[in-house]
Amino acid sequence: MDRHSSATLLPDGFIGGRDDMTEQISMVWAQIKAPLIVPLLKLAVMVCLIMSVMLFIERVYMGVVILLVKLFARKPEKRYKWEPIKDDLELGNSAYPVVLVQIPMYNEKEVYQLSIGAACGLSWPSDRIIIQVLDDSTDPIIKALVETECQRWASKGVNIKYEIRDNRNGYKAGALKEGLNHAYVKQCDYVAIFDADFQPEPDFLWRTIPFLVHNPQLALVQARWKFVNADECLMTRMQEMSLDYHFRVEQEVGSSTYAFFGFNGTAGVWRLAAIDEAGGWKDRTTVEDMDLAVRASLRGWKFVYLGSLMVKNELPSTFKAYRYQQHRWSCGPANLFRKMVMEIIRNKKVTLWKKVHVIYSFFLVRKIIAHLITFVFYCVLLPSTVLVPEVQVPKWGAVYIPCVITLLNAVGTPRSLHLMVFWILFENVMSLHRTKATFVGLLESSRVNEWVVTEKLGDALKNKSAVKAIRKPRFRFGERLHLLELGTGAYLFFCGCYDVAFGKNHYYLYLFTQAIAFFIAGFGYIGTFVPNS
Image (cartoon, rainbow, N blue to C red; front, side, top):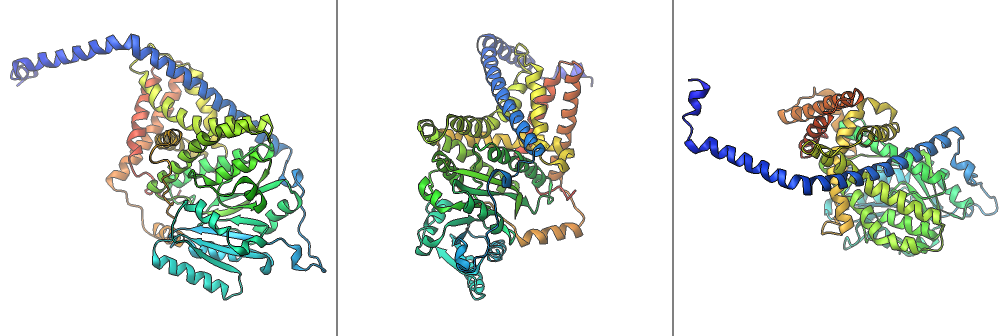
């Protein structure tokens, strides 16, 4: 039976009804397109192009500053006084300041031994250091394990305190705040903070404390993070690329220009007097570390970043854990900006330059626009122009600026430059979650104070890597599908660049197809199926 004869077997009104529905949809689209859709799209594109330029200028500025820092070797030791603390025969160990080391933890079964062991292994006069383990664990078995570990180190002569609470009010900020209320803390001058998966080297205090001792205007010394599981899978490599830019560029620029950079919540040493003057720890947002840093900066305190001092830690190994972490890291700054913008504007203790830097560069561009532009412009507006050819997007806004921004971001991790296309796809997938979290923070909706502790694997990670090395990787159908999505996205990326470079005008189709791949991949588990490379 041929095609024409088969069509005659359909109900009489079927073909006509389908054509009528198509015509009605086309008529409605034609009626609302010119007066409503086109003007709205043009306005949205214009706003996004302005935000793209703002982000582009910020990235280029930081690139120029970091280049000058490297060329002129502006190390922290040259900008601030640094001398090793020397022994005094008359004063003895009293010449050394008393340092408190805080380790907040919550059900950290896999890493509690690593963090406590590293803290107890810090090189410092034993009578001038106090290790404080702040255990908020709700699992009684884990609580008992942590307490036993503390007792074991105490039996070796380490001055270690095991502190617990009967609630989790304020989460990490609440634990740190209550930890400073103990009587023995009054003798301390500085406090070093390490999350449960961080393992400082023994010389950490010898390299950081002298900055605070010899420079009374300094409130914080922040070290860099070193990721022990960066090569575990493709997802951890992508995380490394994003965080390396943050530490190698953003933090370094803020420190080198005497402007401002945020405390990373761990691997840093604070002057206790600065914490007290800033009002102490507050739990009004999920970024209590950034909150404290902003308040201390508004009172005139300065911070120094040591890019050469690295502290080992662990990246989230699953997409679910990473997504929760990114929600907190995106929602918190947006909510803090909402709460503090007027306080920053009214402040009279800092210069206008620092106010502009904190409000415009630190918060507006890096914490809000950077998330919004990636999702709204590249994943929504540009694909939408496929249906509305009347809206024209200039090539400099759709191609050239994004390419420069991408290269400036990726250059922070030279060893992963060959993964740049996959990093673009991954960041666009995450832009959906970050944009949603940013709006949650700005609008202060119900999930604004949601806190999910990032899962850590610790020693289990080593066992997992050993099993991977022995067992040949086997991919299930779903995992192959995600690999196909990434490969297709990479192909489309290069096709789109080719079209633009040679003057073709159909590269919007590439953007539209790529956006679909982003959304599909965004609902998948893309982090644990790629073997070590």
